[in-house]
Image (tube, rainbow over all chains, first blue to last red; front, side):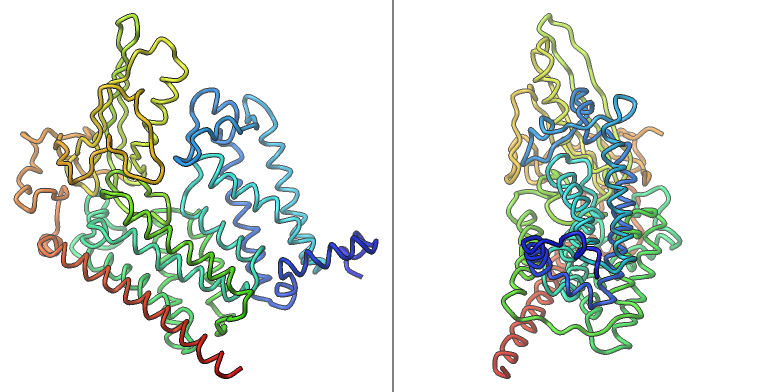
Length: 431
Length: 70
């Protein structure tokens, strides 16, 4: 007798358990070694994700009180929903994450006992909290590796035809990432030539060759990961394994540790061709991936301006390595008593997205919370891929601004508004 | 390291003849590609949508053939 059957032994509990198993297609996991391995990889990914969340104040009430939080543009009051307290302010956050740690361990134990229903049940809280953290409660945990983890867990835990849609989602995410790469950053390779350290391991003259090869492989080659032909499938698989190991030279462990295990399990030695499921239950999977496609392209084509410059809609969809950023923000705070204070912030880190929204969000908090402030004169200069610093924001009172989540904000200048060239950057760093 | 070089004194100004928004330093291949950037963008978007169309075509074909065989 399975553990779950001994836990849920009354007739109605058995019925609920059967409905749960049916609704989440748990039999698929029980019968499929590949899915069982992906289940383990997903637990591993949650450990890694929460390892970086547990000490972070992004989801704490103290972060909100200090005005250090940032919300998604579509939910700008997220701070009012935060409830945890992290060290040194309190114990609730670490207690909460240790609770999740225990549930993840429990899930591993249920796998050991081969009770996939309980293993599934124990993983659901981690999935829900991760989803809330990434898409609702803060803007600060929106790294693309979190999108990957969300997608893998969503398919694995909720959808039918899990193996097929896991494979298709990996391939589609690579494919969609090329929509973010169709930019001088990758077509010319200026992301890397603008870096002081250049492209890792390869000479500068070869940068455009490698960047265009990556675009080609992620756009076209990746579909052959699903091929029936072993040589073709294996060749593409080896390319992506090398690609992830190589990219780790820059991005370090987090991204490859989230994506590579699942890629190895789905497309490595255990790979077998999976037929396209065409029953009504496959609608949910196709709907999910169709939504991804619409969001990725919608943010690109529907919001005016180069999103790499304005950053509007940039995080709706994949945006990894989309551009090399540098920025300078100057906010002159004018108080009601006539005094002034200048806040100067700058970033030379290629990976710091220099999102005017994020800077504006801080200004907005200051305006709302400090009644002594009369106005804030604000300029924001943004350089991408070693290009000139363009003054994309130049406003007399940032306190009077609002930010639209799904449309262009006129106070942010696009490249077509001929923003003033402020100067030219020196080569920058990746950090 | 100073992050901002004044445009008037910067050695980078020497590269401004390469289509204005030039990166800090361009390698030779980039100098060639930058002249065809717009075309390259169209080509890559073309490949993107062509690939997408082929994938959707395969999907529809599979649906069609499975319906006929059932």
